[in-house]
Structures are given as structure tokens and as C-alpha cells.
Length: 176
Image (cartoon, rainbow, N blue to C red; front, top):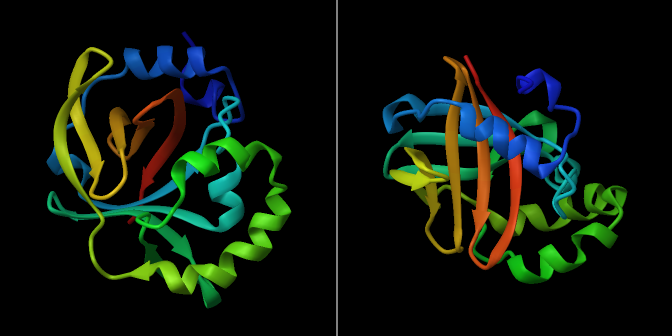
């Protein structure tokens, strides 16, 4: 089994999940803080999509106050975005056909309409793929992001969307 460095630039979903399964659980309290994120290409429809839109990462203030989608806005400012109005099922269908350059130009135009200060998720301990570990439960979307520890400041995440068996795999690195 290769480590995180062996998959960060792309791998199969099966190999990414094998690495995820081999990693230890992480506690909810250890997830608190700000995290920079990056998707791991596995052939998922969302590969490169969040990055093209300016995704920065996630912010977990308390177990009850979580911002699952933090984006870089104008002048480098970080803003939280609500996933409430994202047409998730349609996005999964059309994402592979949408040029990432179009996303990079279009998302900044709609992002101000989606910016929020209200938390949009919670942290819980959930069993996922045979282990109980910290997970982010979105408030208004059928999404759970399950986490496993790579090291003290790095976690591997798997986004589980209800009704879609394909995992979106990402890495989070703790910010100072």
C-alpha cells in the first residue's frame, strides 16, 4: 500500500479507498480548526471542479458550527458558501462535461449569492467503511464527509453522497 504522497496526483477510487481504510480514526475534537483542502483525482465527476471554483477548504469552529465549503474570494479573502442550493444530483451528472475554465469564470459571479456566516454542517463520530471516526454531516444535503488521520496535521476525507456509490476523495491540511 502506498502512502498519501503516492496518490495525491491521481489514482483509482479503489486504491484511494484502500489507503483510507488503512488509516486510523480521528476524534471530533482533533478536527476543530481551519483546513486547506485539495481533491485527489480518482475519476469522480467532481475531480478538479471545486479547485476550479476556488475551493480553499473547511472550517470547523465547534462540533456544532462547521463550514464545509470555504472558498477564496476577491483579494484572497476566505468566505463560507452554503451548499443548500447546489443541485447535487444534476451536478454529478453534468460535471464531467463542464470545462473547468468555465467553472473558474462563472462561480465567482454566483458565489456572493451563496456566501453565508451560518454554519452548514456538524461534526459527529460515525461508522464509515468499518471504522468509527470523525465525520462532517451536512445540514441540508445528503452528504457525509468521513475523515481518517494521515498525521497530526493531515487527514484523508471521503465524501459520501446519498444515492451515489462513487467516493469523492480529498486531503485536508491543518492551517496555522
